[in-house]
Structure formats: structure tokens, C-alpha cells
Length: 419
Image (tube, rainbow, N blue to C red; front, side, top):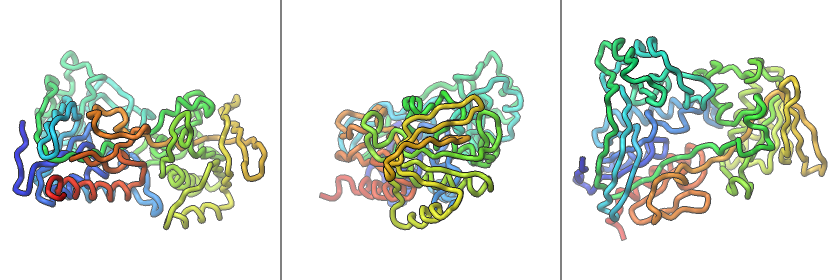
């Protein structure tokens, strides 16, 4: 398929359906452009929909995401391509040629989310939405409020036509086990790159015992552990024994600001850890929390959130890095740290440790042209007709991602018109 130009100019391609990508797509469409929104996942919303709450208001992200989806449902100018990735880009501003490959979803728009297919599916898969902390059937709804609102098949864990129990169970002819990969060719005038981020691989931080000690989790995993639709139904429980922890240690900058791992500050990790400490204090009245940090970064209006945590008698904040985490026979954790203000080493025990792993831009491993300038960290700079937004551009919070998306849409809309 080849895209056609709109009345105001050539179509705009937006790569990534998270907050910055959704913002860019909707703003460009409301400026009169046809927009092709390409998202690798089976659903929109990016990492934000995996979060439990935003800081500082501590409200669920589904509220904000639903506003985007409502706008998306009422426009005909945004053409959504989920389960899709950009395979190749060529050309110049005003006339880029883009090849998009779409994987088979196995479930079409006839799906009513009745769940009959799930009831008969014999195969399970790790649930990526919960970072592998739980399992779903091979045919699954990514999460309750997923958009597009229909099931998907993970063909890597599906027996295909040799099983076909889901096909027999579906009354609406919604399942197609023969669906093949499709390729589309688009011609667009400008490209917004909003490919988002992924958490740093904590297994590379061997001194912090992730993957070795059961009760060491990452900040993104902890966010799912406290979510009502998460693997524990929102209860904060130790992975080792399913018991609520009496003490939780938050290890800031786990891999960030470290020349051996991520040299950059990931911008949101401090506030994410402070927010997660609030989860513990509010849910577990007897529990204590401890933070180990390099610097405490709570800019602007977020300072009040930090000060409230500092005033909490069950919370301690220590300036110093954690050098090592070891596990005792009962699954408890021993943290060796340095208090840089007092100039001494500390020993601290905890029932659970949460590693604030940093943000790695997905653009660092994407199949983008080498002419698109990138920093050593993988974050993209602008190039003619190509505008990065959100965490493809730099680490930032949700509000920053939305502003970036709007700015990128404006630049894309006027690409080639303003000198």
C-alpha cells in the first residue's frame, strides 16, 4: 500500500505508540495530516500502561491513556499498525519511502473478548506485560484495557493447526491460524521517532544479586507487583515465600551514572523509587523503607513529594552506593553500602530489595538508517525530516514525553515549509 498526500501535505509516520507517539500522532492528525502510527506491541500505551500510579498525584495511568484512546477513536486520519516494525527507510524529507512489516496477530476485528478461546487453550507463556512474573495462555488479552481491544496469539508458544481448539471454541470466526506476515510500503513527508525505552538488564549488575537472590527485583517489576491487575493482585509480597516484607531497600542508580553500564542519569528513577516507597508505607503499616542514593533528584513541584518522604519516621535516606547484596539462608538480604556523608561503611538487612534500573532507549537497537545521528548512549538527535520524541530523544517523565510528542508533531507538520 502506498500512502497518499493529505490536503495540507504529505502523511506523517510516527514510530512508537507510547505517550509521546500517541501525542505526536493525534496532534499531527488534528493539524490535517494523514498519520501512520506503527507500534511493535499488540497494544498502545508503551511502558506507561504497565505502571501502577503516576507521581506526584498517585493516580493510575489508565485515566490519562483513556483520553488519548478516546481521541484516537474519533479520528479517521490516524492509521494504526500494531504488531508492526519499520524494516527499512530511504528517501528524503517530503518523500521518505518506508517499509513496514506486520506480524500475524491471529485474531481479527471480529473478536468480542468473550474469553472462550482462552478457556480451551492448552499452552502457557510468560506474561511480558508483567515482566515474566506471571503467565498467560498462548492466546491472551494483553491486559484488561488493551487497545485494540481484542485477543492476540503468541505463535512462539502456540501449537497452531495441530491444536486449533481456540478456532473451534470461537463463535465469531475471529481466529486465523493461517495468517501470514504482511509488508506495506508507505510514502511519508516526515518521521517522528517515539520508540520509547526499556529497563537496563539487571543481570549485568552481578554485585546486586539480581537473578541470584529471589527477593531482589527491579523497579519495573515492583511496579507490577503492586498493581491491582498484577501477579499478586496488588499485594506487596516477597517472591521467595509470598509473605509481606517488613523492610524494603531501594537501591538508586542501579547501573546508571556508571561508566561500566549506563553513563547517563535516567531522570525519573529517583522519583520512581520515592513513589514506590510510598506504596510500601501506605500498604504495610509496620514496614520500613531505606533508600541508598548518589543524589536525590526531585525537580520543581516534585520537591514536596520528597520532603513528605523525608518526614516519614519509617523511612531512611542514605547518601551512598550499595556495593554488594548477598542472600542469607532464610531469603533475607544483606546490603553492604557506604555512607558518604559520614565516611563509613554500613551493613543493612532487608526482606526485599528494589533496584532502580535505568532507561535504555529502544532506538539504540532499532533498524534505523546510520545517517540518523545518535549519541553513544543510543538516544537520537534530529536529522532532516526526522524528529525524535520522548525517551528516544532523552530520559524523561510522562509529562515531558507528551510535550516532546506535541513539539515533534509541529515540526513534522511544517517539515519543508519553513526555512
